[in-house]
Image (cartoon, rainbow, N blue to C red):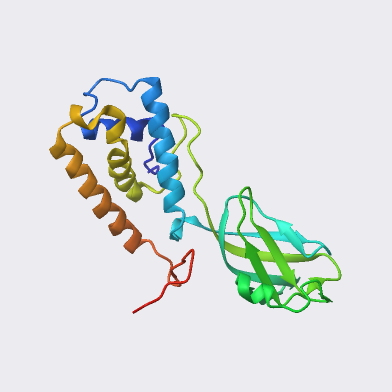
Length: 224
């Protein structure tokens, strides 16, 4: 049995149907489809902040004697890293935050084997730094949380497993009510979509978090 999936166009139409913005057998205007796709991508970008099991990935990168490498924009967070020293031995290296990395008195110190890595998030692709800077090229295995693959057209399949599609449906419906004019829609339907969006997302997030889930803040948080 093949896995069920939906395209971007199908989920946009379903969300509009749920709002009562279109009827069965009707289609979205091209401008409505494009705006809903934009809002879908905006929602997925926000959801990328959270860790999900289905977005766990790994790859091996080679870092030269420069000691740094620009990674793919799809790399959201690095969970762990290992220096591949042989076909049978991978040595774990520490993942440092920005404060730990910048406290080093000599960030360009060289060494035979890296001990730590720091991932600096940047627009267009984050930068991975190693310390000490390797004297020769090194292969590093990364375990990371990737971003979503964003929608580029209505025929593209959603980058989510089927169990997440309901959360996408109601989340997109909740974010799209303004496209059609809230005064033209049934307020009860809009409210129901808003409530379902929150409940569906929280339910899926709770069931799909990695074991080593952690919270990430943009700035220090004082707990009282």
